[in-house]
Length: 123
Image 1 (tube, rainbow, N blue to C red):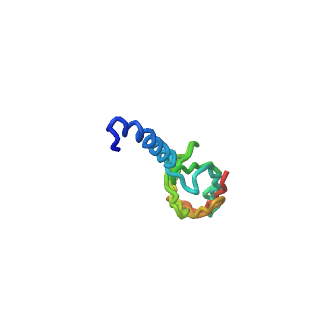
Image 2: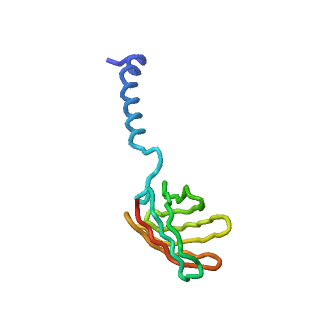
Image 3: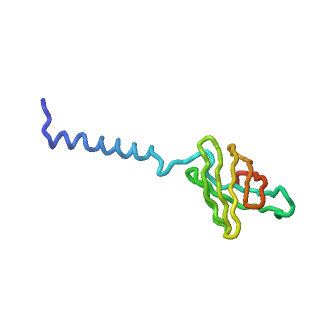
């Protein structure tokens, strides 16, 4: 016995809607990486003449680096944890490279007159 079109729609529509809802619940609203979250980053200079360094909190979301402090940060953490970042506070600018693991990381940075290292701990 063949089903009429209205009966077929009435029977299949709830199942189709359920499948669509299940599919949208599986897909995250945005991609997340292993490194997403807040990181405390200690920046140290190689020479005393360059200052004592500083500690700041960086945020990683979808692999993108940003900060809420007075210093602007932009950059990226790859799926393998490789870090590329630029910090800028108006008068000073530095770029950094390094590597994160699930809980910590380290790398180097370089500015126009100074350079040094950085270490990071997940908060």
